[in-house]
Image (tube, rainbow, N blue to C red):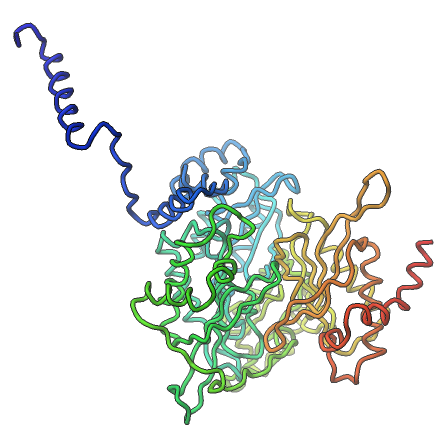
Length: 591
């Protein structure tokens, strides 16, 4: 009978018989799906587990699963070359390369970089300024993660910009979306006479660990890590998912003496929480391995269904620290060291002016010079001028800070006056008022689709208004953020403003405005502020800040009582009663 079948038919029958035989062994069900392997496997398995439990993946989780962003570079460059801006799914994917479609605020990309510990070389700053002018709007912006951004980038410029940025030795990989953001450290690392630890090697080690570990991309949500060396200028590590705080353990106790890192977890100031001490400590050389283990637990158990609860804080809230640390220890394969807080020396105090002006370094005869900028903006001329000063008069380093300014280091005593004059010639300054020393603003709706207000413009208006009317004699931090993402960390400002649309009539028309909080703080005064007013029109915000400062000056318990302490001493009702008399001219004008 076999002679009745063609060769092709014989092959078909052989396959059919083989398939039937296999079904006898495994039953009539379809073969099981292959278990994920490779660096993306932990993420896929975590997604599968949450779907199996009856949950529905958030859209970004589906996008990551459909096409991993790092596998889409060729498509990004091909589409961008035609001038195409991405839709929601690819806008998310392109952020893995540092590119953000900011439409409708602007029909262009914003690019964010990765600068470990916020430090770059003079030639890199000058190069970034050139690229910003060649491919973007010509302005660099210092961010609240001691990083750089550039804007107004046409899609067709995306590929050459990223490639030329890498020619400078700077990458943007993973600077947005569900990834570990730019690693921050003490801005005065290595030159601070007070510091316990130079954070630069730690930030650098972590930076390259991330870049070379694909498994550390595509987390349940964005993730922040920071190292603080206990110096004069803080790193704001308490606002990060993981904060490593340098501490000294003196001799004579149960714990081994020396410099340790306190591990604090769960900071997310926009959700009204600061990182909390875990009781666990590590030696500096262990930090990268421990951070890696913490993030791998987060990869396995972070929420991939609800973006509003997908940060580390919510795993900690659900589990508690003991269970979470046990999972970290399982990943590490060893226990973490616990040290009683009573055995840890107090944290040295910070200086709110350390990031601006001239200060002596720990190196004899050298100084750092903090340069003041208007809410973080630099033109090409200014950036190239500062780079030249850094090379000719300093050590060639440019240090960015979380306060949206920069520091030039290694300036000899004999050249300080020359440096200050050169900075002034660029339209910048090394001196600052108590208001502008801590004036922080996010991009705002001039360049961000999420923002409800033009934060940078309003910040400058508030500063100008207050400085012309109130003789404030202590530093007061004012933070303006445009939306719930809280990029300017409004809840840790002495006065924090978050953008809001304010109704102005019965027809539902709105104008730009803010909710205003008071009493926030950082470092040794870390605290989440409390909301005092909601729905203040932007045009009225300067008068509200003025009224707060007038009430403070009139009722503080001497100059030693800072603004935060003053607000904490009064409950909301008492504070408002002190402020209201200073708002009466505003009310009369409105009537």
